[in-house]
Length: 116
View 1: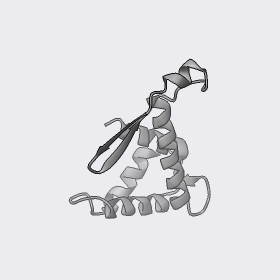
View 2 (view 1 turned 45 degrees about the vertical axis):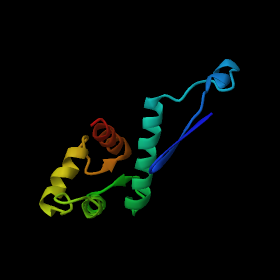
View 3 (view 1 turned 135 degrees about the vertical axis):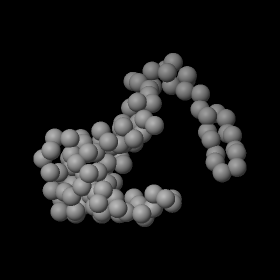
View 4 (view 1 turned 90 degrees about the vertical axis):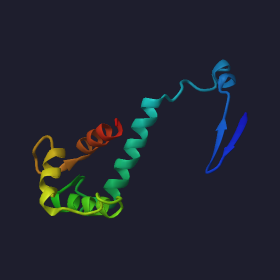
């Protein structure tokens, strides 16, 4: 086990070969599995906060509030909410055109964003 301390963070490096050699765990969690888990957690948090009617999907008003909150927490010049672009943003995520953002659509958006 190795501890490395840098200004602002602490990193723990653990040699996992003992676990692999003893078959302690059935598999390693790779980067893609961890990315999917993280995106699922983000999506869960978005649903808890913005699906105020608990419908299981986000309607346009709920997405408007999400966009307002994103703008409020963004650095200039992205910190201005533009109502005229809300519908276009909603439509770009609503890929099946049913008038709601479903979890799979949000997950696809978050996956695309995280690729950059």
